[in-house]
Structures are given as C-alpha cells and as structure tokens.
Image (cartoon, rainbow, N blue to C red; front, side, top):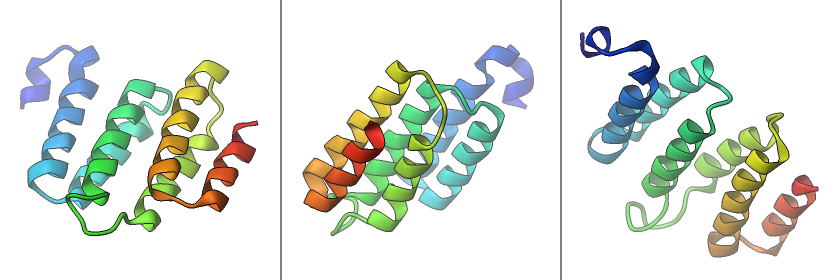
Length: 118
C-alpha cells in the first residue's frame, strides 16, 4: 500500500530500504530476494547495486559472522563484473571488489580481480 501512495520514481528507493531492514533485523535471504527482484527491474542502477553490496558485505563478514562467507560474496561480485556498463561505473565495482579481496582474500583472488578489470 505504501508504494501506491508514492510516485513511481521513488519505488526503488523505498523497496531498497525495506531490503536493508531485512538484512539488518530479519533474514539476509529475504533481503537478498528483495534486492534481486529490484535489480531484475532496474539492472543498470548502480546506486541500487552499491546499496546491495554494502548490505551483503555487512551480513556475511565479521562482526556479524565469525569468518567471511566467500561463497555468498564472490558470486555477487563476479555477476556485477560481467555486466556491460560504462568504464567509470565498472571501475567503482572493481575497486570495491579489490578492496574486499585485499582485506579478506588471498593473492590469487586479488589477481583474479585485476585480470577481470583489464
């Protein structure tokens, strides 16, 4: 009902805030499914991708969990790295991925990011 009262251009922002709340207080799986539905509708919205990355990284890295869950995080980065966006937008995603791998990954995973960035 809340979406019906809002202008159509504000729908993605409200839905993304609901997904963030799911990640924080509810189930990360429900938050992920909300974001996936949102990104199916708006695949080129890099602001939504950035919010999705932030929520996903917070949910699957310490202090929320003991060890980072690479099986949850890396497929999301790989999927985003395979998109065809402008170079400036892609640089943002590869920088985030490389920062993550620098902090939590090993040399081989960092090299994987660098090779895909070229």
